[in-house]
Image: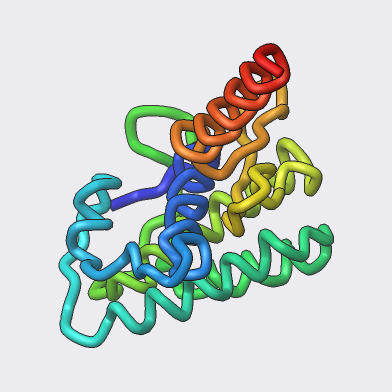
Length: 179
């Protein structure tokens, strides 16, 4: 597996999805009970071994802490630490794109760490630190990395949090109109 260094949008999306599996986002319910399922959902070719799920839960806390404290120096230092287990940087054979590969035998947590680190570093370099945000929904404790072109994303999970806010606003308008 190789992670293209300019494919930070994909990598940042995985980092966002990872942090939003935490129990505090889901009011106490764990949404990362199976590492293999998460890797499969994101097309990450890795085999999860017993005991690695705890390491990924710790990685999730680390990535969340980086998103929550989006100071440039802090993000760079933290994401660089996440990528420190990488194997080697190379040019992709069929293009002029740089890529990083996990070292041979890398564990699932190391692969996810590398991907999250590449995503964070790419966003810091290309889009800036203002793209690291908390969810705008009042009842949500999620966080995300905004990689949209205009940079106006407001919710960690637009289909869930954004929809809840829209429904609440609609009901409020109906209530005011009927009153």
